[in-house]
Image (cartoon, rainbow, N blue to C red; front, side):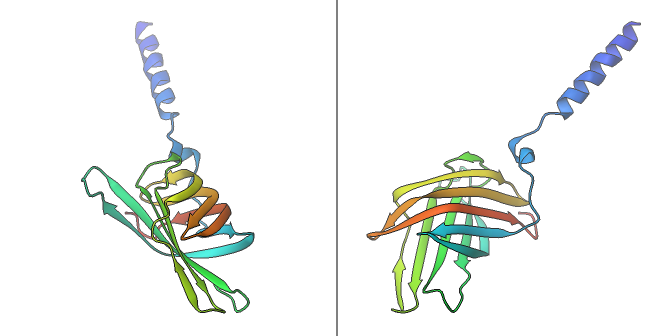
Length: 164
C-alpha cells in the first residue's frame, strides 16, 4: 500500500509541475505579422523590414531592435520610419527603451529626423519576447524636435521566419 501511495504522490507532483506555465505561454505567438498604430488620429500600417539582436555595451545582455516603415499610398502626405529598441526576452510593462522616428512630408519634401525620443511617455506592454516571435502594444505622447506625435492603439506582432 505504501508503494501505491508513493507512486500517487510522485504522479501528482509531476502533473502539477507540468501544468505551470510562464508568461510567454499565456500569450501564444500569432501567425499574423502586423505592425499598426494611430498617429495623430490617422491609422497607419507598417512593414517590419528589419530586426536584430545586439549585445549590450557592458556585456550584460542583449537588445532587440525593430525597423518599421509605414506603407504609403498616393493620397497620404506623410510617411514614417520607426526604430524600436528593448531588452531581448523581457516581458511586462514599460519595457521599450527607445522609440525613434523619421517623418517624411511628401508635399514639402522635408524630413523631420528623430534620433532617440527622450521626451514624453510611451506606455507599453510586451507580452511575448522570445526567439521565435514578439508581441507588444503601446501608446503615448512623444515630443521630438518640437513636434508632438500622439500614438494610440500601437501593436506589433511578429513571428520570425528563422528563430534567433
